[in-house]
Image (cartoon, rainbow, N blue to C red; front, side):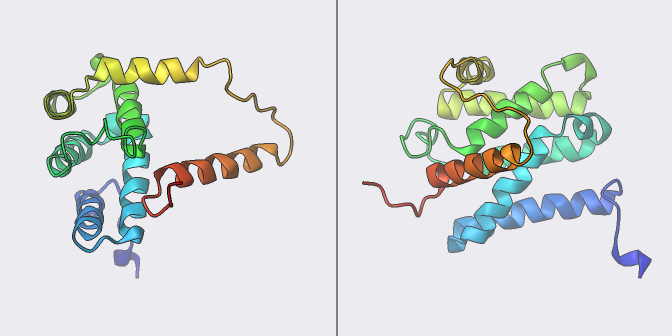
Length: 178
């Protein structure tokens, strides 16, 4: 019935989302579930890039950022340095989160506090700081060798599919290295 579908705006919906984020990570970590990894990546990708939700749902974001910090505590210290994971999805998600929250005046104090703890942890554990992550992203975005995409029917979808395939090839731990 109508009670089965709770809107994300409710506290129960937010708790369910955080529970799914936690469960996906635990399943990936404990049983090496590829499906769980994909779900964890998708949830983080979306959470880190939804600027409007950061302002609209500060308790969700404060809790999600704290959860991400707890999850990263399980990552090895060379996680962002290792050549297999240096350019991983998580680095891009952290950069997106930093960009989405760069206007501190519009960010709730709970979210700012959680972010400060996350950025301090990332800096201490992995040797990365938020300004460096954003500088790295800006350097990549300004690369003259980046392809230019024209908005022509079908081209954008083909480009998205190609980008997704390239990301998966680059990020997939099951991909054989030559």
